[in-house]
Image 1 (cartoon, helix red, strand yellow):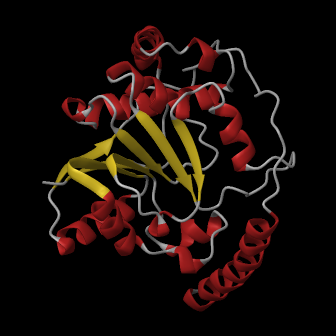
Image 2 (cartoon, one colour; image 1 turned 180 degrees about the vertical axis):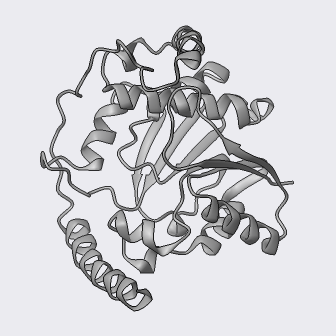
Length: 270
């Protein structure tokens, strides 16, 4: 079985190398004119009956506090719920005392940036002049409608001042940031290959070390993992590097039942 798994991983990795290099050579782009919108009735119907009212109350609080009208009218149900989840993570775990005017936030692994409304409204609520950059190594990955992650990200941020979408490998990115966010970084081979990246891009130790180098003194790196084994591996890397961090353990969303368990760490740079 182990040999078969290794062979499968080898074949998928070979395919990913070809596909990744091809799409990053072609860099195909098409303008997105609108986003799919769904009615938001029954948003939390999948939750247990006793927690649905709590989710509805918190959604209303976030809607008013973070001005979510645009998001609610231009998103699928799942996208809206995922933005609520990101807002909840930031409210619960991000050190809000560190949010100051004119600071620069980096979001690593932005994909199609379907949760940028959550980031934008959270940080703008705290410091209106903050700037946000998202970086994505595989921005030209294409969907079945022939639009890419890049297309959707650029459409989502077209009404957001001081928000930038960067195509590239964060390990080659040298700009400095006041705080960094990393949602679901790849730490083990199988998820990375399943999401279409070559194994050569799996460098979790280098990633953590580099992010610590580019975050400014007194800054933070918020890391959210969605598998317990990856969360434990990140802790080992942090311990080996000697970086101080807060271990918040498992995070449970008020808005959705996640199939994969999620865990939160906050690295503080002295």
